[in-house]
Image (cartoon, rainbow, N blue to C red; front, side, top):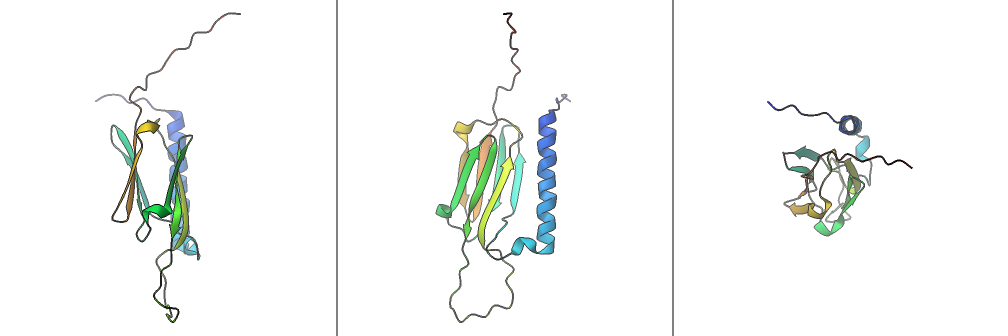
Length: 146
């Protein structure tokens, strides 16, 4: 079994992601995330040896209403899930589905090849793939005298 080298920055980013998930789950449990006009789509973040993936469930959202921004190793998924109703005469007794604007940001724990990032939207699921940088070798920098 090969020995994997630990990266302190990755450990910190993993801890931050776990804390964000705990906070989001606590909001979801109390119903605070269901405030009118706010939506928190569920997301899976996972990886294999070559690629990191983010999958977000966005049923009822049109592709053109989704915005993906990638900057400084952080991917942000934002957009709007409209509240659609058939008639002004409807009297709702319960609304459990979430509607409104959403914004989720994730720090990537590996360097990725930004020129090869791909996104697809199919059957209400957005999948973004981030190929990892192949050459992760350390480069020694010479120190010059004055």
